[in-house]
Length: 260
Image (cartoon, rainbow, N blue to C red; front, side):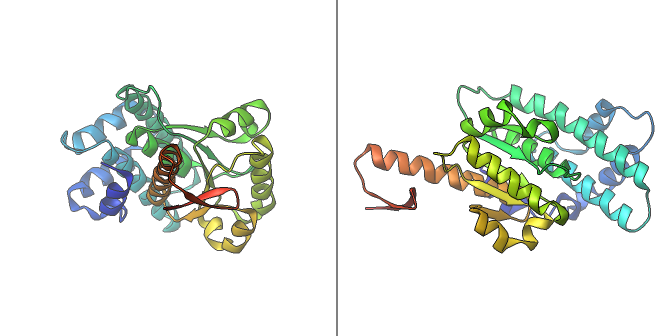
C-alpha cells in the first residue's frame, strides 16, 4: 500500500476507530507505569492489532497513544514526569519496531530520507514516528538531532538524501531553523534535494519558510510521507523522461515535471 492510500484511510487517527478504544486506554495507562518494559508494551499492541493489518497500524497506534497522552497533559490528568516517561517508552518501542520493519525489506536500494530538527528543539517524538512510518513503507531514513547536526555526519547524510524532512514546533527557534537550512544548503550546494517542513511553528511561518526555499509544508506525519512519495515519483519520472529523450520543462534548475 502506498503512503497516499494509507494517509487517506488513516489520517483522522486510530483513536476514532472504536475497535481500539480499550487497547489504547490500557496502553496509555501502562506506558507511564514505573518499571514497565517496552517489550511488554509492544506485546500489548500486538494483541490489540489483528495480524491481518499492515505495519502502518502500529505507527497509527503509537501516534494515537502520543496524542492521548498529550490530551491528558492539557487536561491535567497527568504530570510532567508521566509525559517524560511515556515519551521515552514510545521512542523505545519505535526503535524495536523499526528494527523489525527494516529486517523485512530486501534493501538493495530504496529512497533515503533525512529527518532533522533545529538545535534546541525538544519535541522530537513526531520525527521518530515519521521515521517509523518510512520504515513501514520500505524506505530508509536517518534521524539527526543535537550534536549530530554538525560536522561530517550531517554533510554525508544530506549529500545522500533523496528527501529531507525538518520538524519545527517551537517558535523561538526561528533562527535555529534558518541556520539548519543554511547548513543543509552548504553541505550540498549543487543539490536541490526537496525539503519538507512540518510542525506547529512551521504552519505559523509559511512566508518565512517559502523565503528560505522550503519546497513543501505539511501538517502531519502522514502528509509528510505522502509528499515525499510524490516528490520521489516525480524525480523518477523526470529521470526516465530525460533518458528516453522526452523534453522536461526546467525552472530554476529543477524539472517542473511537464513532459512533452
